[in-house]
Image (cartoon, rainbow, N blue to C red; front, side):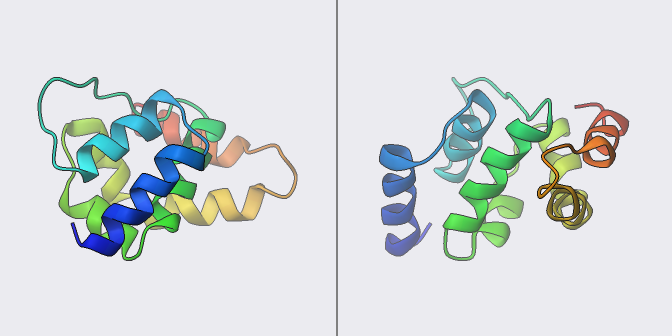
Length: 108
């Protein structure tokens, strides 16, 4: 993790929207592999907080994909572009049935 990414993550921790899955994601990005829960997003709002974190960090997608821990997070990383496409398509309506279904298909 670069100094710039670390500063951005610190800013997000202080000011961003948090949930258990986005905090887990932050832990993974910091390199932690033990002693934290592997919570993954369970609904579109959880996904949104993770999306916001990844997009807040410089090169956040690459950092995320290189720091994945656990099978569910691996499935998210492998399907990241599709999940983002569905999120971006449905976020305006505030209702995300396609994203939610894809998340369920991935076992989240």
